[in-house]
Amino acid sequence: MPPVTPYSKYIGDRNPIAALRETSARIGTLTAKWSPADFERTYQPGKWSARLILAHLAHIEMVCGTRVRMALSTPGYVVQAFDQDRWMARESRLDGREALAALVGAGTMNAAFFASLSTADRQTTFTHPEYGAISIDWLIHQTAGHQIHHLRQLESIGR
Image (cartoon, rainbow, N blue to C red; front, top):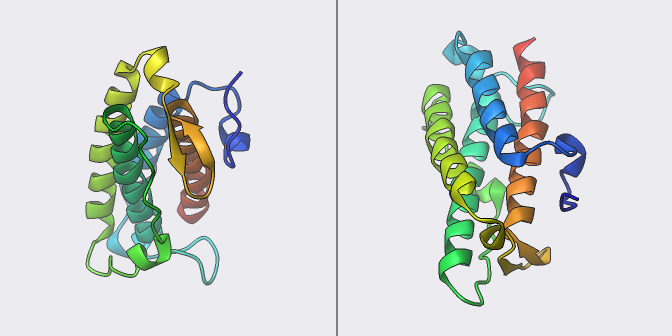
């Protein structure tokens, strides 16, 4: 049975690594012909633009990949929390294509790394300040569901 995360409803019982790869490919296809103006559109007034959603997803790939690597190499690892809105406020110069490239690059690296992990590796636990003790498997599922959540926003923008 897959772990339950705040984004479980988006992934269901799908393989999370396959879902990460599929979502990344879907985002690439969806945005392939977008203009710079398309990347600045949003799915709802007051929400992040497509460019910022992509930057956010790239941040999550960087953070989650680091967390998994740290959990595997640092006994008693405790996650450092971050404020996504404060991070986003620093991304004013990253354009849509650059954000997409960062997401695809980090996502490709993480998916390959996650696929290389053994069942025992994926059961490695660490501490998150918001969620408490979680496993690497939990984090992989969380990341996959989170990407699907934001893919739906990007698909809305693309319509």
